[in-house]
Length: 268
Image 1 (spheres, rainbow, N blue to C red):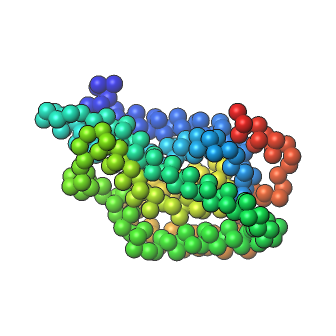
Image 2: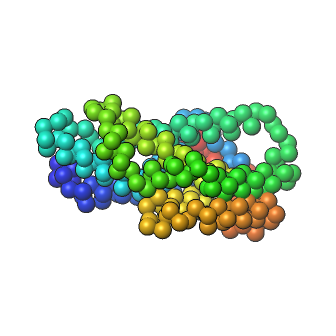
Image 3: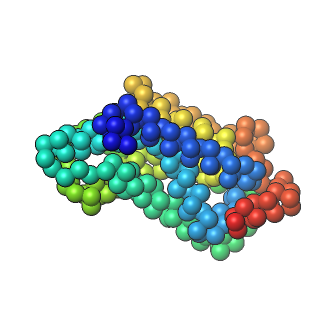
């Protein structure tokens, strides 16, 4: 572990290995769970467990540059005689921010479910509502807040250099702050995931790939408008002809067997 800690390439490999392991766990736990929009989220404890696993799988690859910068600076500060702060604390703070977002989404889901709004049914106005949510996510791509958060996520070095906080608590806070910017950057894409089926492995992979392209690749900063147009077009597609959208499960066609499989897994 000491050699990995001092080797950026080794640490990056370790981080990506963790993300890969989380993908494997997610695939195992979510296989057969996708029932499209409105998928039952189960009890809070089960949901939080699967949500954290999902976020580690989806977000750690795109967060890797920031995590590596933190690890490099922490290592240099330690070399100069200051207390060493493990990078996992920063990562924990980052995932805590996404956990908070997930719990908020769960609370909204429960409130909507308790309201028993019949028009949200998939054979009523459900496709229109899902399509509208996706279109809103597309419009968010064009807002100043999105631009600010994306800039932070793509160029995190200035935050580490000028906003460094000492100690373990400081590292946890830095991770949470970076996670908050990441939530600000990507919450719209998570809305898309919920609208299309939060347990859909297909759409989870698509959203994770889009986030990585936008946050890490050289062309990411130029994808804002194309993604906005693509999301709005997808929203219109879902609203107009949901049955023709690839990877979108019709919740009205879920068999009792699938419902029982989902319930059994949630109660494990």
